Each structure stands twice: as C-alpha cells, then as structure tokens.
Image (cartoon, rainbow, N blue to C red; front, side, top):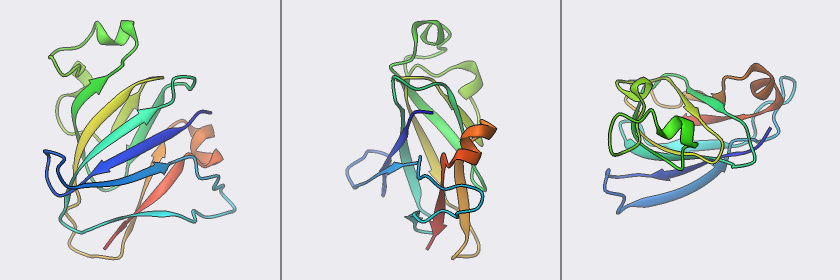
Length: 146
C-alpha cells in the first residue's frame, strides 16, 4: 500500500513557525478498530501541509472531510505528470481552485493550504485515501479541532 507522510507548517504560509507532525497516515486502523491517533489543529488556523507519497508506493487520492485544500505546489512528479504542469510550481489543471481530494503520485510531494474554519470545536474530521481498499486498510487519520 505504501505510506503517506504529512509535514504541517503552522502559523503562517512562510513556514517560520513549524510544527512537524510527520503523521504516518497508515495508522493500521480498520473498520472494527477505530483510529488511535489524532492530528490536533487549532480552530481558525491556516496550515500549509506538505503531503509526501513514498516513491515505492502507488497513486493515493487523499481526501479531507470538512475543509477544502488549495494546492500551491507539486514537486518530484513523475515525468508524464510534470509535463502537464500549468505553472512554475508544478500544479496541474486539476489543482486549480479549492479541492477536497488531491491525487498524490508515487514519489511526489504536494503542498496544500488548509483553513480550519469551524464554528464548533471538539469535532473530528477524517483525512484518508479514497482508494476503498486503502481506506478500509487504515490509510487514514482523524483531524481533531481544538
């Protein structure tokens, strides 16, 4: 199945205030065993996520419930993907606009901005792979809004 890592840069979009979660999304959770780990996020915060897909893996359409993502950069894209880039940041036509799902190719790194704008704290929002067998196999983690 491979692994997905998330490097979270908080506070501002320049990356000066960093909080490295290195959340290995492959937590081992299953349908009968709930998620044990949560990524904690402050309500109203804006985060820059760096999502990394293992080079020996496969494409993962990563989906975040409740909050749109704005893709700001793609790096280390496979050649046939990189050739489709529409700007110097490596973004694809499908990256333009707000997204709830972002496809991460093997070996690729995607940076996306997420604004955790919620009216009610204490909620959990899943972040998971949209390949059904990966989701069922535990390629997911909860985002806990503080």
